[in-house]
Amino acid sequence: MSDGGLDELFGAADGRVAEERETVVKRRSPIVTLIGNAAVIGLATVVVTAGLRALGLTISLLLLIALLTGLRLLIHAVAVVAPPPGPRLRSGIGAETPPAVDALRATVRRWERNLDQAHSDPDRHARNVLPVLAELADERLRLRHGITRASDPRRARELLGDDLWATLSGPGRRALKARDVETYLDAMERL
Image (spheres, rainbow, N blue to C red):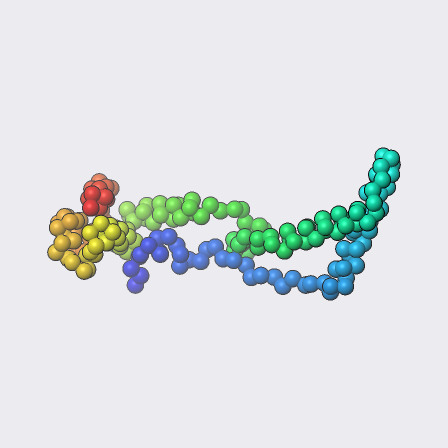
């Protein structure tokens, strides 16, 4: 039985967003790459020289080739250090490219769904909401007072109050009303 911790609430165990496996990139041989780059530089040299001559300007052919070679090396260097593409969302059967999903919005919707379902199902409330409240209380106690409910139960009970203590540790957990949750959250904030 799951304890309904923060991992379950955040959906970390779901694995809804997965990176696709990297595809194997076929590399061309260095000779073919060199010939291709030389052809691009040669073609660019011819075009630039013709354009400059049409305007009545001249430039040293060696300088032009050096500039175009430097530009091609710069383009190659930028391509090498470019960041890898971001992860893609796993698409459903027959779906094309999935729309971009805001992870925070999806998490908040999941929380809302869990809380809405918890109102109608006391068992779900005991599995999902109360363990999260207990973790939040333990975290506040740890941060503010250096204790948890397990490490110093007497002091934790004093700090939390009898109602909140009974709700978080009682065996017969019942569904809470909204005003009760609000009261307990206020008590945790005052810690």
